[in-house]
Length: 348
Ligand code: CO
Ligand code: ZN
Image (cartoon, rainbow, N blue to C red; front, side, top):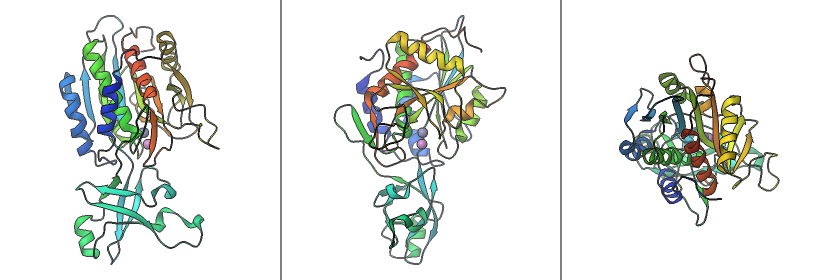
């Protein structure tokens, strides 16, 4: 199994840079400017729309079979929004995206301005009582006034975690979906080196974790002939885990369905045929829950043929999401291989 196109070293460097950055849904300014720095030299056009989506166009050479292709990865991550501050300065919070209470306890978090805190719990008689509303963020404030000054109600915190790992398996927060963002940047590098006939719109979307909100307006604005989301998916390969087909290191996961999308049969087949022909390791993804940007995009205007390529990830929505770099490479390779083809046979 060797990389066809993607630069593994650059992908790893991108993941290590992008994953630790701050960017909970609705607060994407910092991560957006970081990604913008990478895509600006690679794109023919860069736009930020009114919701905050970063859209980078790499223009194709055109010709028969040339289409408008949208590839989306979300730059937002899950977070915690301050809802209430008590007289001693402890912060109660609402989840921004999906969180499990057990994984929150003891975690370190950071706010947009760099204020840090840790997550504590009330005294519990039973571990079953461990619910989000029994947890609080402690920023070490002396009282309500200090806490309200530093982290007023409405402030949003994200996990603090560097990416760690030596070999091919990397652990970090917000692999969902900074690993997808890294893939998009790598695809843009490869499009520069090996131009495609298609106009490729790389969308780094906002607010996916609260319901693929950014992808909806981006999909409408671009109105592509083909849309692909690049996101993470769950695996079934941990002890007594879920019964899922996807495994870490099993290759890129070609989505059949999740709760937001049934992949267009033409798109799914295009991905399968391309992976098979190019010798790219792949596995089929059926996820009985969850969704991606493709779910929002495929319902825009009169409908968009859409699918997704997913990076299998263990411990999703925890501060220690684990990915395998070889799956990331396979995902980038599959996208590149698709973009090297005429899409004249599609339903578009
Ligand atoms: Co997510
Ligand atoms: Zn995601």
